[in-house]
Image (cartoon, rainbow over all chains, first blue to last red; front, side, top):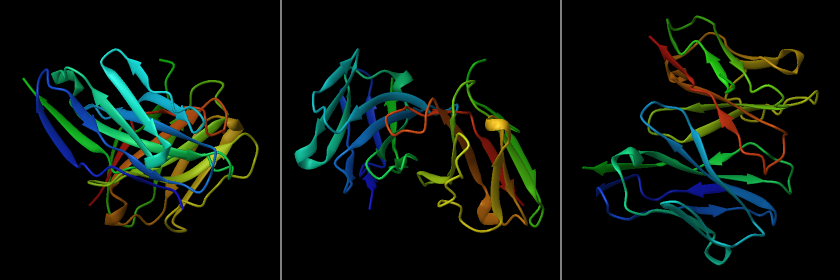
Amino acid sequence: AQKVTQAQTEISVVEKEDVTLDCVYETRDTTYYLFWYKQPPSGELVFLIRRNSFDEQNEISGRYSWNFQKSTSSFNFTITASQVVDSAVYFCALSEVGSGNTPLVFGKGTRLSVIA
Amino acid sequence: GAGVSQSPSNKVTEKGKDVELRCDPISGHTALYWYRQSLGQGLEFLIYFQGNSAPDKSGLPSDRFSAERTGGSVSTLTIQRTQQEDSAVYLCASSLQGVGNQPQHFGDGTRLSIL
């Protein structure tokens, strides 16, 4: 069965601190995709990144970076030099391709508060 | 705007009434998804449409929930005889194709409150 666990319910940091959001997943498929979405206070879900199961190369986009490790079934997200605008709920999600199942399975989200 | 459009943005209704929620996906997107986000919970998959294929209804919580997609575009989610536990934000998403590698683009949601 597919499952995504975001163990951190809430995190609070002071502006300019680095913060890592954890995501651990479970799947029986060998082919799958992992996603991160941001949900700011306004409510809309914003797509941040997609990673496929065959590509373990880490990715950096500005202040954002992602660390995918199949050995630990983790896909962690780091924000460097956090800013108040980063305050949001962040969701990690999984899509299994091998089973033809494309709806996303989401974690329960991590609420990040960045304090000025 | 070119994004996913949902209406209404807010809906308040009395227990037992039927409600209809509308989703207009991004033009050209063949896959459409409905999710539900309850307070303190993650997003829960409800139903998925891909082109002309039969929808995947595996996430619908009860037979009071149904959805249709007309002409491969606009979708309506209907909840009959609403209950208080149906109160949630209902989110619609679309993707270019119904394959797992396509990012899903979400609308702003409909916040449903059952009194």
